[in-house]
Structure formats: C-alpha cells, structure tokens
Image (cartoon, rainbow, N blue to C red):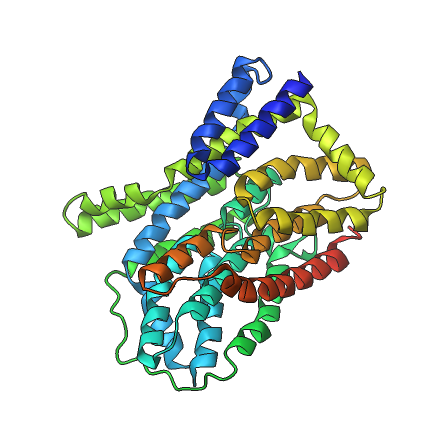
Amino acid sequence: MKTIALVLFLVTYVLMIALANKRPYIALISAALYVALGIMPIGQIWSAIDWNVLMMLAGTMGTVFLFIESKMPNRLADLLLKKTPNVMWAVVAMSAFAGVVSAFVDNVATVLMLAPVGLAVCRRLKLSPVIMLICISVSSNLQGAATLVGDTTSIMLGGYAEMNFLDFLFMKGRPGIFWAVELGALATIPVIMLFFRRHRSPVRIAELTPVEDYFPTWLLLATVGLLIAASFAPNTPKNINGYICMGIFLIGMIHSSVKNHGFSQVKATLKEIDYPTLLLLGSLFVVIQSLSQAGVIDDVAQLFVKMGGGNLFVTYTLIVWGSVLMSAFIDNIPYVATMLPVVTGIASMMGCSPYVLYYGLLTGATLGGNLTPIGASANIATISILQKEGHPVKTLDFLKIGVPFTLAAVTVGYLFIWFVWAGV
C-alpha cells in the first residue's frame, strides 16, 4: 500500500507541474483515488482538511478585494512617492511599500495594485518600466512570509503548527520569522539601489488618488487587530482565526450592499475569491494525510536525516536551499503542504524543536520563487502586465534582478533563523 501511495503522489505531482492550470482538479482526483483505494478512510476526510486555513484564506481574499477597490493602496503609494527625492529612491520606496502591503495582502493583488503606479511614474520620466515592476514583484513575493495572513504558505504553516499572529513576530521568547524576512528585505535594498544608481531624476506626483471608501481599510486593520487579540485570549476555538477572517469579510459585504443599494459589489467580490486555490488546498490536505497514513512521510523524513548525516545544520541547509531550488520552478503551495509533515518527522527523529526547520522551509519556499520568472504567481502577473504595455521581459533580464535579490534575502534569513532558533 505504501508503494501505491507513493507512486500515486509522484504521478499527481508531475501532472500538477505539467498541467498548471488544472492543478486543483488533479489534486481533487488524486484525493478521491486515495479514498477509493482505502488508503484514506472516508470517516477521516473531514478531519484531514484544515478548515481554519481555508476560512482564513477565503475571508482575507474577500476583504483584500474590497480594500483594493477602495483605491486606498494607490493613495498610499502616491503619498509615498511625494516624499522621495529621485527615481532611485522612488523605486526603493515602491519596493518597500509593496513588501509592507504584501505582508497583509496577497502577492498578486499587491502587484495589480502597484503596477499601474509604477507604470505611470516610468511614463512621466520616460523610463523602461521593466526593472521597476520586477523590483515591486520580487519585493511583494518576499514579504508574504512575514505575517500569518501574508501568503498562503504562511497561513498553512500557522494552521499546521498552531501558530497565532503574534507567534510570527515573537515565539517562545525569541524573534519569529517576521524578523528574518524583514532583515532579508533590508539586504535587498542595496541590490535595488545598484540597478538604479544612475537614475537621479526627480519624481513629481500631480495629484493624489481619491479614496472611494475608507471602510475596507478599517476592516483590514480590524482583521489584524482581532487576530492579535485572539493570540492573547485563553481557550479560543480551534478555528478562531478562520472565524475572524470570515466574519470581517461578511461585515464588509453587508456594508458594500448597503452603500451601493444592491448586491452588485458583493457579487463582484465573491467572484474574486480564488476558489481553485481553495479546492487545491483542501484536496492536498487529504492527499498529504493519506501519505502520512501510508507511512510515506516517515520514510521521506528518514531520507532527509540520512542525507544530512544526522547533523542538524546540514539538514537545515538542505531544507532551506533545496526549497529555494524547488520553488524556483514549481508552485510553493503543494511543496510546502508536502514538506510540513516531513519537517515535523525530521525534527522528531533528530530530537530537536521543529521551528528552526519550519522557518527554514518557509523562507526557502517563499523567497525561492523570486529566482526565476515562473517561480511565483506575482512574477508571472508582472511579466504579463509588462507584455501588455509593450515591454516583453527576457528571462535573462529577470534573472539579473531575481538571482541577486533572492540570494541576498535568503542568505540573511537563513543565517538569522539558524543563530536564533537552532538552540531551541
């Protein structure tokens, strides 16, 4: 049964890589086959799915769409650009702002919000927007791992390891992964400045983008505030974070329907929720639990321990940089979903805390997507936007930015996590 489970998983993974647009359905069929073969008992399907993660993801998607539609992100970007002295610092500021926004908003949504601003600035200054938009893209992808709600992989780690919002900042009296990501972001600033060192023309913003509705901004702040409050509350329900995100989203839809005297905005918001990703995650939860039931996860964990020679530093290094290479070419959602239980098994076998390996996995898998133009959805969206604007992006052009950016960010995060968490 173990061999069948492994072969089915490998076929599933190959098909998901080869048929990227069909991944949710491939994962669903795979989950159904595990059930049909008796590897996953029918009675355990519901408990295998992490409903807290799915509710957090769906609720955050809806609230973020309302936030984008309010034009508040564009207003904030305009205010930021007004404070910059020249093009070089404008790109640094826009990249940093993309990172801050992406810590709370989906990476692709961040790019869609800020790309028009970057294009407008480049038009005014008669510059090619390629490098600026790529910098915005890789910065948004970098910061997704900083908070519990920043990226799907962060939400997955939070749900799997039962981490709350504050655990990403400080956990067990030590700095959390948030600080590793932020230090990595700081390390990328010299890389951006190097590319724009000759661009010192002033940036001028004629007028600020008007905000159409301030309520979604308060909703997003309330989401973060309540997630933090839930971190302190005792005896909270298991799915409390999911309830908070869905509850805030429901309030946003009610406000929108009252404000617009109808349900047109509500329908538009519901359409913007990424249902295929929710289906993919739900199916993957069943697939991974099936592998665990069959004993495959334990075998993979043993393989990693053997490759690392029983040395924690070598094993940690393999996980971080192996994740960078994997995420440069494949989607990090199924990869992280697969590796989380593997990492737990490795930590158990080595008799160490799993957090150094959890954080290493998330750092490598999230930041590694910046290595290539196909490694992250945000990068693919950016290249599509540039092509529509008549600026095709060559792979070499992307690598010139993506490789040094990724190496700087991952190296700093890799060292920080090891020195802070290896002794726990």
